[in-house]
Length: 95
Image 1 (cartoon, rainbow, N blue to C red):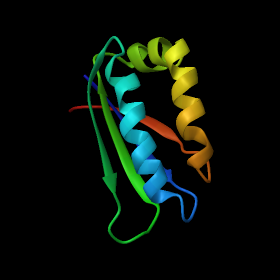
Image 2: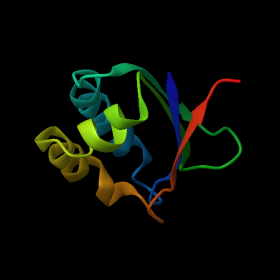
Image 3: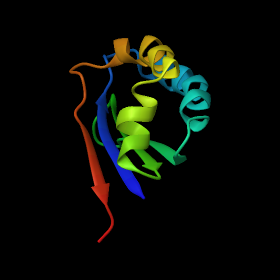
Image 4: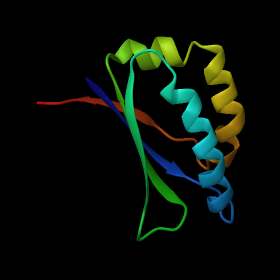
């Protein structure tokens, strides 16, 4: 299992819209091969800051399968305009 971890900084004033759109976008990611689960957490101390955690069966399920899919293009269209700056995605494995 691979854990994708992403800090998302959302443009000021767009937090509630982002959360609403993210709920709809969750349908996309959860339908992808190799997807296991995901969680979105809102930061308590910093308005507009979120932590996205996604569990994948393999790294390639995310980096090749999801990112190379037509569904990812829809995901981008729905969500990427909310980010400032664009997030860095990191992957982790359990030790």
